[in-house]
Length: 341
Ligand SMILES: [Zn+2]
Image 1 (cartoon, rainbow, N blue to C red):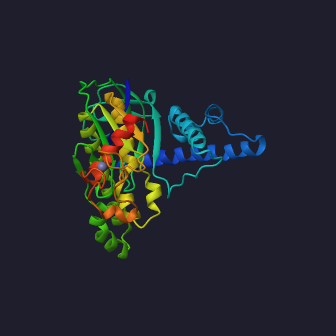
Image 2 (image 1 turned 135 degrees about the vertical axis):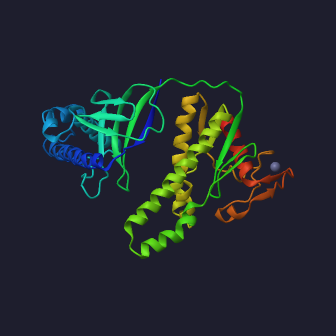
Image 3 (image 1 turned 90 degrees about the vertical axis):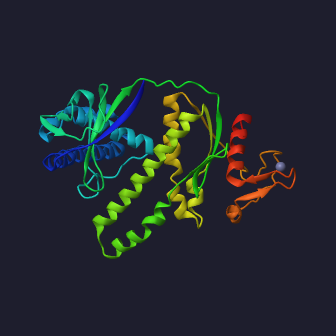
């Protein structure tokens, strides 16, 4: 069984107002956790566990207008985040800076068709696709434009795709999102560039809402595109090898803008969980030298250095094979994964 998240947009504005208030209550619980956790560090030199936090907040749900399971979910998320980020204190959640967030457990909500009932409130949402199985947990959350959504995490039976034995190496790039070892290229719109002018105009006119809207649009488009390509790849191949390219390393260079546009890590995460869902094997390999190594004779005869990034094709001086740079890199990534480098 796999867990899948389904997201739906909440319909009316009165509902949104109610959700905003509930969101404030969740902030209150979060900030309370943050405070008592710091006190615990001061007094006892250790953090509070989710269990401790649950005990401390046990009776406050009703007063805050929240379902008791929501209070628990906030406490659990708080404890988890502290542990994950190895921090003694997390950011305070504030009305201005934090986007609304109300987590819940399956038992705390009732879903029927396009309506979700939560603690005596009914919220209607745009039923863009049906909810086939039982909701395990989820949340109401707000985006930067102030729209509210409801997320349902449901269990989904594993989909089994027939094996075809096909393998592929993927080279993630700046100009093309991904180049595959069999020569297929997935291009990506240069969104930063496309919206650069619109953004600049809005920023100069000090139209904050417009700026946020443009950023949200870029983010959505990128996500959409990443979804499409990752689905196409896992549907086609049984084994996937992808380079361990790090955006952080390249972000420090003059190519920073294109790198943040590339969104490699989001893409890899998406590819990863889709691969698991379909039983596709995915391996991340060290891609050092993948661009400079000839995939035919394995000599390092290719153009090297950041300045060589402009070179799109080259001929191996050793064996005479002519290479398209990205396809050659993708072939190497596949070879490296097979040889276990
Ligand atoms: Zn060669």
